[in-house]
Image 1 (cartoon, rainbow, N blue to C red):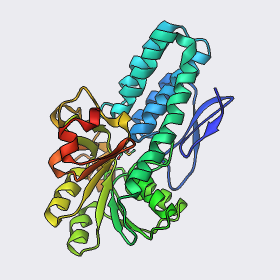
Image 2 (image 1 turned 180 degrees about the vertical axis):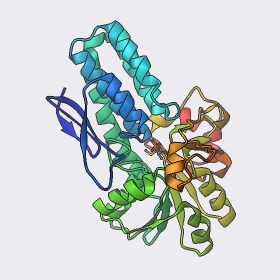
Image 3 (image 1 turned 135 degrees about the vertical axis):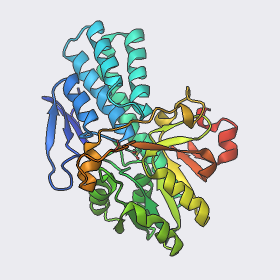
Length: 330
Ligand code: MRU
């Protein structure tokens, strides 16, 4: 397959490698993913993470398997195993369904090219989302964002953070408040790392400071990513997103979701049908020093569409009336 490097994955003559996101920002360690089993573990353990990126990484792993001479039956078995790696981000299923369709119509030899096409497409989707999102950001804006939504979560420049990066490139002076995003700190560890890299002025806050920050008038708009958007606009994103949406409603602030079309689940009518991943208690024990305490650890929550000001996709910006008219599946 063609060699390439993005912020979080790379392909070379030895195969696919991923930047271990569990070690950031302390250590920038690249890990090889020699086979499908290793990729499933990387995805489960969040060494590679973010909705668009896990779809691309799984597709590239399959493309590599096919290129190494696996049969159609072997590839199909691997594909169904990869599909189960994590349940909420529909990009994983959407990308793998596309790979399956390609194999059924064009044969196993077409899979390496298809995986590369999916990978390159993500870069273009990110650019379009970033432009659409940046157009809504005003010079002087103070933004608030949640989880990590930049180049570590995609192959391209990101979703919500991509819009902020584009706004800075357009010469707008902005400031980003970064939610730390408990329990795994994708904001504190990863978004701060990316903001520093892109020279975006930022301030890190604990998740429970967001409402007070809004009350103080320090937030102009909130931008978040998504792991699965239902046809009616309800969407799943990192746990804590729903609280931000409720707080935006109370404070009269715009709340935007930024995602590529690969995050829309055309088979999902509303948020109640989105499977929400529950993760192991150890993650909360570690974050709270309460080893052994009974724990509930949903990795995502579902925000109802009534709380969303606009959906910023690569295809355009849609308000609630557009979404009611079917814009997300058009
Ligand atoms: O559990 P994670 O870190 O994979 O969750 C990621 C998110 O919730 C992101 O906000 C989401 O994937 C959209 S940004 C690309």
